[in-house]
Image (cartoon, rainbow, N blue to C red; front, side, top):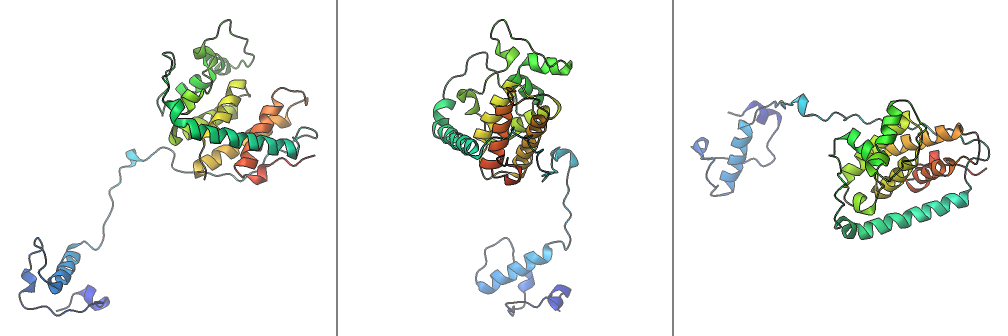
Length: 265
């Protein structure tokens, strides 16, 4: 007698089976084509009609939802946006830097780090903020003071470690993106500082194309924040202007977020 499934779904290869085929041993190898097809049928009949996956919510990552904003940038005040030639020159230089990092990554990553260079764990966001920006900036911003005076002596734990090639060459793509997201989120709530600009440039230089959705959203957020700060500058002589223009330029022109690009005056 045919099963309900066989009635609804006729077999593509109808095969007549001899008496006693129901006693076929599924653990042994088939001796002929008919036994093979019968094994397939019997194995399929043992599968449940409905299967429910058991998912442990605790094992899900915290950040699964990706919001890729398509909002544009604040328009640059008149005279604050760079020329097209300047933008093209920066993109060319940036491309050369990326090629150099790729070519020499193995060489630089093989160098021994100094004893004082203790890179944080991947998930230690606060540790990476202090590593890149320094305790002076992090503690000052936490206390709502933005005027940070010079250090009497160079102490990387205070002023932050620069993005040396021996450091950035050790970062895989997961770490590059995590640190980029961490610094961009910090930047959303604080002012621009030179250490931040150096690290953002270095991380963008290490960011592989094509972009992951998380990276796409992050660099657009970065460009919008730069444009927001630029729109509040009072003078074209402000020392932050070239750095803000450069980051906007790289996101828009090199990473092809063309709707964010500055149009020459």
